[in-house]
Length: 209
Image: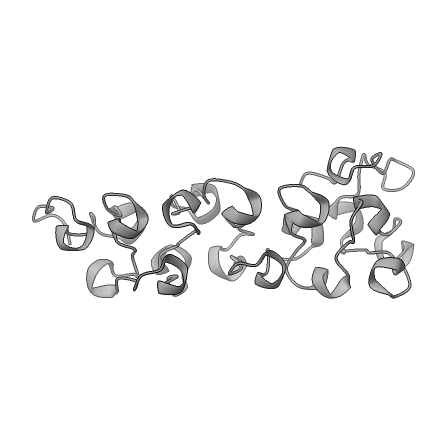
């Protein structure tokens, strides 16, 4: 995982004297160390991290306190960077309370999935979910099918429409009018694509579901 460097925190990087690396990284700390002035508790120092705790003065903002870090992760608004991923905090992913979105945690994707609105990225791709995930450009969120992530698909609350059920894709697929794409192909839903009545595209042949 990329370490927290000077450009991230707005201060000179914590050098070898502190971390043994150019910055405070997960491998060095293993926990989310936050200073006393931030959390109202005694600083989590060498006994916890093996290095000096990550305090508010490091980030130039009010750092997230222990209760936030104990949950899924630090969001972009903390340090003014895209986002601090799971490996930084030693947790699984970004939680809803931190990022203001439905957390895409390890239980969803099997990885620490960072949401598009948090990270400012286009979408969660094959490297994250093993398929081309539908990202921010599609639905405004990363709508992942049930068979893709092993969880119930994100439905109306996410995309603003009623999710199409198993009768269509075998998963809760999102229709073309919602996603702005012609159809969800077999790689995503386990079928060739969604039919014309669903997606508003020319009907697929007999090979489609």
